[in-house]
Image (cartoon, rainbow, N blue to C red):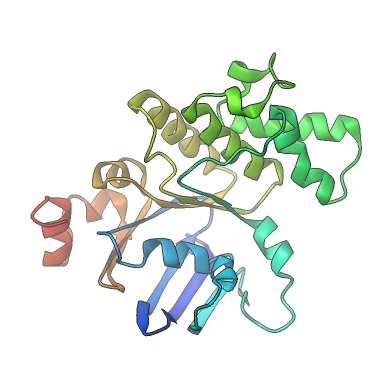
Length: 253
């Protein structure tokens, strides 16, 4: 597989805490890469390093060593347009946060901020994003209603649609189904399997079971270090490292 992102000897620390230590692996293009492991293993920190959201940490001393390459270019190099980077590498958080406006405006707000004003193109991208997030059929007749009227599962898919409407290349998902019921979770997972044909997806799952269901590439993190990475079809059946075996079989964590 072609690498969309390459992480090379990445170490990230804040104050006196090392959240990631000497992590190296490639994230393949147009596939689902799953970052899994117990709490405080560095999963969310790594996700936020991929589009420089950790730059926004306030009142803490942070330090990053190593490289993250997007299409072969260092995203931490001098002169990188961080706003454009975050458009190319979009983020969906665990707790859905719809904007206090209509369903339609939730999707067009970012597009308008980017300079898109053509009504036809805006409508096209609204429908495209909602269809890709498996939400269009549920809201197509309600686009001018407030987004807060949607259910929790619908709000999560709306936030995914909002990211997709900006046409990113990479989608980062930080525990996006943790608060959802099984039906909504299944809809999100089904959407991801379709979306990977066009997007590079990096997912922090809410469970080992979800990791096993969704991963093309699985990356196991423990104690801020990468233990092993490999195809999901192999890693969850026959892991190479005993620590991975113990975790996926429920002996700890």
